[in-house]
Length: 586
Image 1 (cartoon, one colour):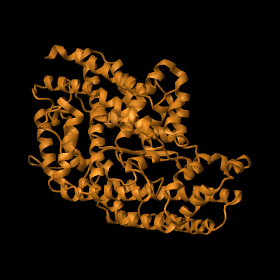
Image 2 (cartoon, one colour; image 1 turned 90 degrees about the vertical axis):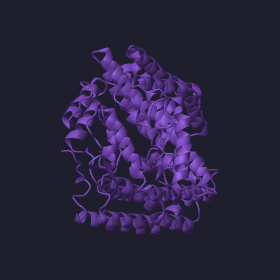
Image 3 (tube, helix red, strand yellow; image 1 turned 90 degrees about the horizontal axis):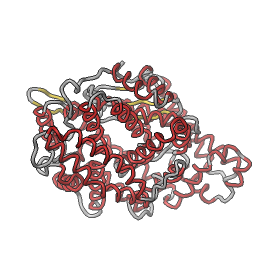
Image 4 (cartoon, one colour; image 1 turned 180 degrees about the vertical axis):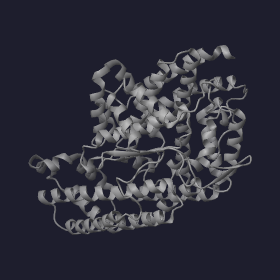
């Protein structure tokens, strides 16, 4: 089956259980409002924790179903209506939630109560985070107004971008294709097809660029307002606190990346020469497969399953078993279609001990790697599913650790088992394509978003200005590796990561996940069988510890540039190896 099965959540939009759960949610929110009026005590805190656990489970079940349904059917008005109802319902809990958080923040007895209560002890990290964030809480009424406003502000702007990109018709030759299908042609073996798809894609954005520009301006403008109201120095400061990550860690990582960029430019310049370009690599050849036609085969879903199991079983039977379950129990929605969002994602459902994965699979080996990536998120969900529902949220940076670790496992295994130097070179290049996106493209996205957020203080940025900012960021990140005349000025239109007010700067976490995972994989190679129990414990801790404390479980100091350089140097050695393997082709 190529589409996912959501019946474990609800059987349809008309499922009576969905309506019943809406009623339960309303009732729990009403009970919360009454409890929030009571003075805090050990007993009331225990009751509040239990009620919040139940409320969170119910809300996440409804929210997950509606979000997953919308991602494959963005034009369905019934889903849109139910999502608006859901957001309106959840917003009713804002006043009670704010009152509860302020009482927790003002209470000095929680540690003492934890000595007497296993329930409170289990949630000490959750409660400590409430205390930390309380300094940025507004009044109950102000928080309520913000919550209500988001329903008709950033939430709708976000949905507009999803709707426009998922329903966009792209004219290519005599065909009308979806945006996801056209973007997948960037991996086609025929350069003519890649170039035609790139040109068709850019032309199609002309139809929606202005509307999406308004979405981006509104969302980043809202982020600025909210961060200012909450007393943060910047949107980035708010993002880092939400990420449980120190500024020193971000600075160390970005500094290391900037020092390593010339090595990636070297890779891109060499690929350009191999493809016959003299002015750097044109954007449409970024993902050109560097393999023979025989190697550029298309894989069925069944073959993708077998390849994943074959590559993961020697490394970890636990990861392999989860992948097997995901395929056999229809956790995955594979193919692109009209009304389905682009890209790929994984949604953890820890309250059901499952996940759901969306991809736009077209059969390439790169798509198999994408499946490994998203199923890494599912494995992360598996490692936290024994936690209380209030302890199941991990932050953006560590969110990309298990996924990128999975990518590393399958690529290293495939490279190691390559039968010929030509196959090895093709696999290394495929891996370098992906890593270059995570380093160079993410650097450009990071720079782009920084400038957009800064300039939104005094400007409204129209589509042409956003194009200029994107082109400048791409030139800085890719340097001489890309042809400066053939870049992608509309990367801000198609990337959904920019369009969530609650997840600003959802770019650097990918670089973090890649480099952290590379470092962990190097440790795994040294420790062998002893590594997986430590890895599982590390992933489990991501929901109840800071980023830096999680890394220290593997004796890694993230605030030091040395760690990041070591991971980047590992990639650099693959670049050197690939250039050496392919020099004879010039």
